[in-house]
Image 1 (tube, each protein chain N blue to C red):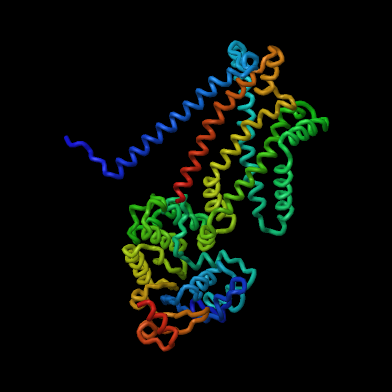
Image 2 (cartoon, each protein chain N blue to C red; image 1 turned 120 degrees about the vertical axis):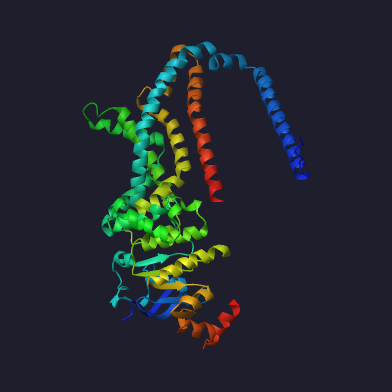
Length: 274
Length: 242
């Protein structure tokens, strides 16, 4: 059997690749080793280790944190579709050209300007405390509901801008083709423009929804005992910060794969375009 | 009466005049080829005919009716005039068959089942029977352009406009698209083509119009305009092509 013979170029590239891998691996190991050796040498390390990386506290509180995280997941799960729908509606409202619908357009513009311009935590306080303060009967005075509404309002404003970019990014020739077939403007939007636009902005929306997953923790400021609040409770009980590290790890377990996936989608799209 | 006619059609983009008073007349069943350099106004004229671009002045008459009245709903008119574009403009998220069925379904309110036989027949006629379930990016340029022709024909238009439909194709794919046009020509479809395929124009056109600086500089039967042009500008243009 004959050995596959590499061309000069292939041999050279293989050599370069091997070298690059070695150097990258070596320098990563070096940095890691330095951190592992140097950080424990810091004078405060034993104290930090005891209050942030306490294995006993970690083991005791982790199940409780996971349980509290279910509430975060629930809030995320029911606000995400609402955000998607509201964002889409607002994006479409900004595209309406009929003069009678001008108030709708104006409202959509004001809406995106206001909710993108105010910090999320302020919206959560104002909506989450303000609306129940109107004296609504149970269960409509729950901060759980209004806090979620605050998240939906804020994120829908961002998502609507993403959709709008997507809609505007569809080439004019697609509209021309739809029009030349005699399709109405709304049919052209519904069957030709929107399906393409929504697909195009999936990675951008993914990134927003990853941010939303983290911002659910802000609701803890107005009441619901979700993971961040639960970690705070444990912290006070045990006088130890390890539960916060546990909470951070739980968030990362969700957001890192999601971020990687969004990046993967984005690079796939870039490749498809070039 | 002409099937489609323009009188003194004017169109400018900003301060740049593109159509400078075009008088075009297309009889029913006629095939008219528009020739001329890039920027001479061929594409813009076609877009105006399909009301994709509003005209600044003049008139467009379809069966003698003024269709260029400002404020007129363009949709019913566009349903009667099919258009095929240089860059195909297929809907990339739909299969070839879905591309062809969208407008008849939405505009003519026909069901997929009712459309099935006629759409299949159209695909077969243009040699695309085995491509109906392919997405545009799975098709060659020539196939995509034939799907675009099928898509326009599915609306059973009275007139077909073709905007340099072979210009974006590899040379070896031009033939199959021209064959599709030849086939369409035999059915007696009224056609207006902007084209650089002089051989094709010579073979099939009833009339050739040479556009120059936004006006029809010379028009007539192909053997006259292409073989013995009267105008110096036409001669200069044709000479540059050879």
